[in-house]
Length: 187
Ligand SMILES: [Mg+2]
Image (cartoon, rainbow, N blue to C red; front, side, top):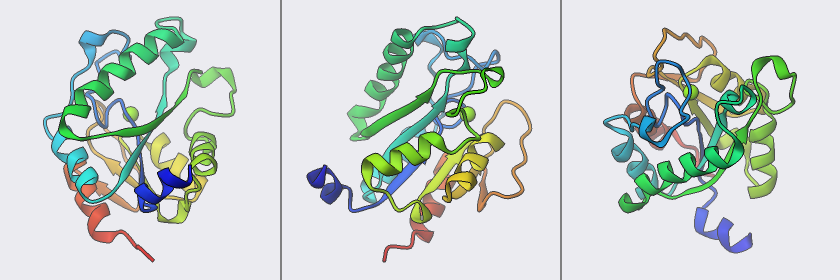
């Protein structure tokens, strides 16, 4: 882990997946590989992060598992496909944290709870106050606020979303990552 930390230069970003990196389908469930569709600027945005020394951690709610639409193996296969689509551009996701529960399950991990972010912080020795949690829903920004990160709402959800408490609201992921790079406090 020491070696990983050195290479990461302490710059980490937490990213939601569905609706943020890939388009949220109308049924809001990415339950087949053929439903994976990157936003037009996702590669450019994530490459921008990689080129500016940021390491990316995915933080994703997957209620489709609780609903029986997919199982954990399906999720892993679909998520690996997303990672494979990014890898040729030099974009590496260091880890994906996933909640398999639905809103009614009463779990401890589903965003807006901060649990997945706190687990990531513990595993990678992350200073949460420096980190941005970026997502397309208020549950994303609230998970960041609950964990003590800065937050960005990207307006790429397939429904209208407001997140008044977000540090910044971005029209798209590319704008969000440029904001983060410009405003990152590296002390
Ligand atoms: Mg989302």
